[in-house]
Length: 419
Length: 154
Ligand SMILES: Cc1cc2nc3c(=O)[nH]c(=O)nc-3n(C[C@H](O)[C@H](O)[C@H](O)COP(=O)(O)O)c2cc1C
Ligand code: SF4
Image (cartoon, rainbow over all chains, first blue to last red):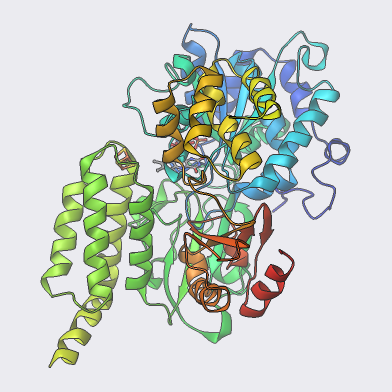
């Protein structure tokens, strides 16, 4: 498949505006500015684009909600927090193809009649900050940003806002709280950000990859775009693959490529002649899958039918040597550390999950502990303020569903040692 | 408490935002870059410059894991230990920093040369294990490579 999101990134100067323009960059913006804002929103709706941040919400619909709200000013926020462990797909766009994101944001700003955009960038990407700020300056000097975009009398300003190491700030309402200079704790929904977001004004929050798809839709048209990838989830998708494959990396493939194709066709299979033991398909918050289930298409609609989720498309591959109880423990330490502390089931419950898994791992668990894990996780599911707590509970349930025997082995080893 | 340059920089940042409190995170970064950490006095002074209550600033500063509340060594090592790095040997690297430099997570070497913070994912999973030293990024780390790299930080 021809690359769009990662086009030209082998070129060492790909982040430079001259190179970007040479390969057709900013043409989509000129085209978009000939359209009415409402026509752009219709076009995005018809393209079928779904948000790439994890939830898969239809982008055109989100924009239409914000556009329909009469409050002003409006804001467009780019979610570049990329904190989901295993995920590094937005990074090549931010560092190698920043103008694609900037172009997508200017188009979305025009469509929403928003004059200000912010890129909320995770603190762990200091290089990306410099690259984005240089790119914004270049775009400003060329007249794509500023007081009079391309001489059309439109104003659009873009700023980079650096996060400071809090995973929860990837959740859109926590991101807004953080951008307002507060602790990054999620807000109750409704009201949704499209009506009351940044500074209580209509705000669209979109993932980096989502916004990077906008110029493509403008370029080839909604009709052609909607035929790419899966019928219910069209377009190209970035998959970040890590762990025990021969060629880990970020792959731009049609949405709906199966896990098997990703692992064996594109990443060369399992390294060192080992066997596949398990895959986390969409970042650490998505339930782990056994090898029997890797024929599922990786899209937002198919994955839930196979017992997991597409999430951020971050595939972590484990070979036969990995102790999955240890992986589960590390995942739970992550959630415990990143719980924002706002609601009790997550703040306390996730700590308990971690403690129980830790004692199983350390050899002091009992047979009852596995059921206790399931019970505690059931008491978290559906009772938390935001999806972080739910996610943690689902992860534990996923490990036990398909890999209960690994937990049992840790426990029986202990029983044997005591005897 | 804050030097004049820092105050000017904070005020410049403030003018980019629609409201003063939105500039709080960038302002705290400016202070941390200048002094290496956020002392209680500095945190209070940021509140005064932005006209945000001091307790609010303290609450914010302590929420985010990249803000430091004690003095750090000359160089800050931020080493990822999340799952993708863990299965590629990040724990060995933590051990090596301990044996070779006497450096435990969340501590500083006696000579003040290095501080170590163990991180959640830093987005380098394809080339794990990985770390940041100050703002420089290193991946594909091995026992030898980490030692060679750190030799360049005195
Ligand atoms: C705990 C948590 C962490 C999240 N982290 C991110 C993130 O790092 N990047 C991202 O784009 N979306 C993240 N999201 C999803 C956002 O809340 C939001 O749905 C997304 O930014 C919307 O953009 P999209 O419609 O373009 O996908 C996270 C959600 C939750 C609950
Ligand atoms: S579920 Fe966890 S992260 Fe989300 S609001 Fe509750 S405590 Fe915070």
